[in-house]
Image (cartoon, rainbow over all chains, first blue to last red; front, side):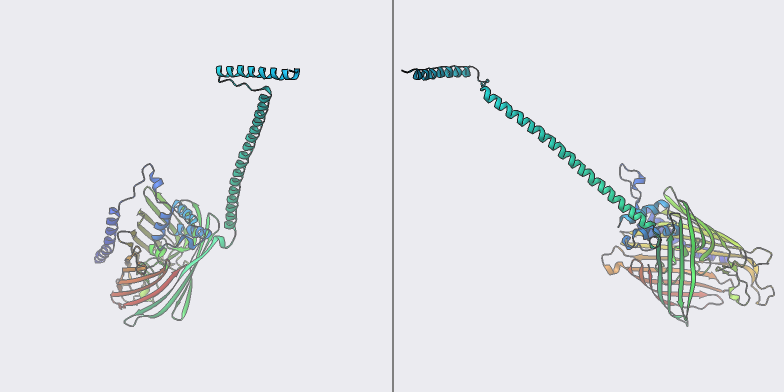
Length: 101
Length: 441
């Protein structure tokens, strides 16, 4: 019983402050509004934003011109599988990287 | 007066008479002009010629316009053709075997470690080349080797080697040796240039959950409303329960590199992660397996669990990037009598329960105007593992402060100091200074 209590206590010390921080910051962050006359789908983050968000979630983003199109094609598939990107996000990121050359 | 003179005088009189009549007529009707027939015919001929020339000019202009249109059409056609040639060249280039569908990446590091209280002191180096092949749009291969220099020896290992089939937008199946998807740190953060501190956290790495699995996995991601849900599920060789009495401290722990599948069991596991916001993800992973030694006659279940949360925000208000991560793992192994003869004393007929994890926060002022400062990253991590009530006999907690300097997006110099605290029968505290140069390529 003491072990369980100690575990929960440590878990609370570690987990709760980070979760609380994330929720507070997340809830107080104003959400981007869709431009008038455009659907939310059209206003959704596109390739460049998705690239910055998804790559930066785990590591620093490398410059799009650090690799050629063929190489990015391979790396994008690798990262789609590794980081569980949605297929649509991966396609938009790939299109952005191609357009950057 | 001769007849000739008479005729001339008569003509003059007649002319005057005629001219006077004409003047009188002009005065009567100013809109009417009387032109001699010859002059009229000449003017008519000139008009006819001008009309013909105008017609010819019109025809010429029409031809020129047609020609210009034709030239414009040709230019467009040439542009289309050039575009098609470019696309065809790219397709041919992309379809070529070899380097166009292959990428060699990876990472490497050099680390200096100095521990007090007689602990380790020295340099180590690692090199992890990663080979990626996109066989076609559906088939993908990933392989990673690991070379690690420590002390006087270089160890080599196959970190991963698996082939994936992308069934559709939401499902990919893989087979081979792959990073354990249930363990967030291992799959997403353990690479030397990604991990923000020179060493890895307790419990989650080389600890309570496997780093790799040999088997099959299915994984994918599904957008659900405003959220994105990622999943992975696998079946693999089960870990091996350590029962060797010659290593009492290891009794009741699990050998994850069970490539021969000594116990002949299969483990099942997976993880579900939900992006509640683009910058915030929570996840839960688990693995379940029977780890009973061959011939034991009963099952001995192991149940490993992990929860993780990650928050990464690039904030103008904070003038930089805030990166917070937390993961906690539990390991439970059913009761088993490791020492039936009792030669090691009491306490070896029991269930084994361990847990531990880490919380880490990092801040890099990327929006600062000073080039030097924007490359600096401050890191703090608290990690622990609790296994004092197992044969290991130690609980360990560490607080680590780190300062990184990013030379490039994937090259970093890391410095850190760890304050170590251990408790339990086998405790031995070592504070540690770590310096590491790591790069990803």
